[in-house]
Image (cartoon, rainbow over all chains, first blue to last red):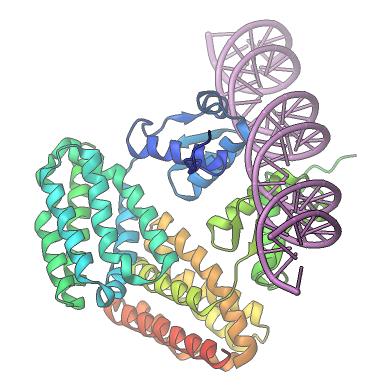
Length: 220
Length: 220
DNA sequence: CGGCCGTTGATTGGATCCAATCTTACGATA
DNA sequence: TATCGTAAGATTGGATCCAATCAACGGCCG
C-alpha cells in the first residue's frame, strides 16, 4: 500500500534540480573557479537533457556564479581581488540597510537563534560549514527587515562571498572570523541600538574587505 | 553588389533580441503590470521559436521584471507599495555606496554631461523620456565607481524604479521630479564633497520613497 | 619560413516534437 | 444545491534534432 504521505519531490523542475546541484558544487568549491561548464557533460552527469542545463546556467549567470559568452560557453566565475571588492561594496550597501530595517522588529527568539549560530561558529572547524553558519547568522539579523527583494539580493551576495570566505579561511585560519564583531553586532541589535549596530557592521565589512585585499596583494 | 559594411546585427542571439524587446515594452508601459506573458504569442509576434522566449523570460525574472510560476507561466511583475519600498531600500543601499566610490574619480567632463542631463529633464515632458534621463543622470554620477557588478545592480534597480516613476509622474506631474536635489547632488559631487553628496542622495531617495508611499496610500 | 585562408571537429543556439501539469467545465452524487 | 471527481483543452517543461558559430589544425602562397 502507498504511504499516506509521499515525500514531496525535492525539486519541482529539472531546471531547479540542476541549478541547485551546480550552485552547491560551486559554493562548496568542488567546481573550481575557471572551470568550463560543458552542457553535454553536465546533462549526462545529472541524467537530464541539455535544456534544463542551459536554463540553470542562465540562472547562475544572473547570480554572478558563472560567466557565459555567447557561442563559447559558461565558466565558473573567477575569483579576483576586483570582484571581491565589488562583493564587499554591494554587501556594505545592502546589509546596512537590511540591518537598520530589521532591528526594530527583531524578537528575543531571533536573538537567541543568532547567538546560537555564533556559538556554533566557535566550535566549527570546516571552512565550508563556517561559511554556511556565517551566512545564516547574518541573514538571521536581517530576517525581520520585511523586504523580500532586498533580502534576496543580500542572500545572493552572501553566496558569492562564501566562495571568498572559504578561500580566505583555508589560507588564514579560522581565527580570522572576527567573532567579536558578530557579538557586538548582536548585542547592539538586541538592545535596539540601530545606529551602533550599523556602525559595527560597516566596520566589520570594511575590515573584511581590507583583510581580503591584503590577502590578494600578498599572493600577487 | 553587397555593401562593404553591412549593418552589424543588433543582437547576437535571438534570446538577447527577445529580452531587449520585452524589457523595453515593460519599461515603457506597453506591457502593463499583471499581463500574462504567453510563450507562444511572444514567439509568434517576434518571429522566433518558443525557446529564446523561455530563456528571455528567465533573464527578466532575475531582473524582477516578470514573475514566473512553474507550469503556470510568467506575468509582468505587479506594481505595489511593498515592492516599491523594496526598490527604494535597495537603491538607498547601493547608490550611496556607488556615489561615494565614484565621486573621487569624477572628471570635469562627467560633471558637464550630468549637468546637461539635468537641463534636458527640465525641458522634457514625456514621462518615459524623463525616466530615461533620470536614470542616465544617476548612472553618470556613479559611473566612475569602478565596480562593474555594483553598477550592474544599480542599473537593474533603476530600471525597476523607472516603472514606478512613470506611474507616479503620470498622476502627479513632472514638477515632482525634485530637480533641486539633482542640482545639489551634482554640485557636491563636483566639489568632491563626498559626505554631503551622500547625505543629499539619501534624503533624495527617502523623500521619493515617502512621496511614493503617500501616493499608494492615497489610492488604496 | 611565416602569415593567411579554408576545412574539420567540437560546442552552443534554435526549432520542433512529445510529455507533464495546470485550468476549466461538466456531470455524478450525497 | 453544493461539492467532489473527472475529462478535455491549454500551456509550460523537457527531449531530440538541426543549424550557426567558434577553435584548432593544416595546406597554400608569398
